[in-house]
Image 1: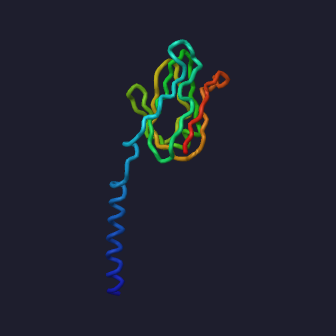
Image 2: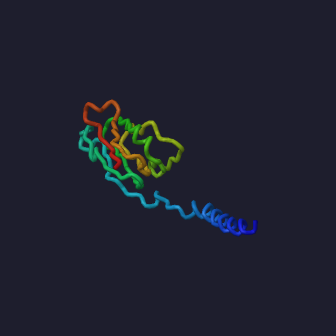
Image 3: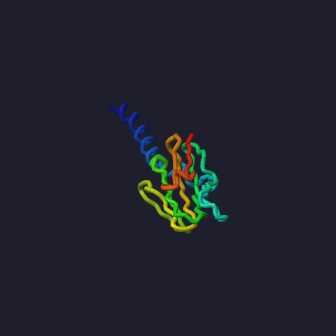
Length: 147
């Protein structure tokens, strides 16, 4: 039995070291996020149905900040349910106020011009459609593609 004890003791110490060092040494992806081009709905020249940067490409496993900016005079309801489902959402920022939570939002709504930033890690590759609900026929749609 002494032989078995000599074998198990170092194994147990290694396991304890790995378990205690794991989370503390893990990389925090949110600290190295990349700012994406703003997804802009409408403009301040009176065109409520133009979209700037309607198609955006991302890489799985990377952290990003996406600012969705409403400049037009419409009410914009930004829906991207599959995209929201397949990202790890760190926070939503509105006027320097942060929202943290355990699940994806249903949609983001702009009753007037302003911006909402989402900070997230892209998880599942795919092409995810977004839309300004009710304004799709006017071209208020696009794609968020995770490669």
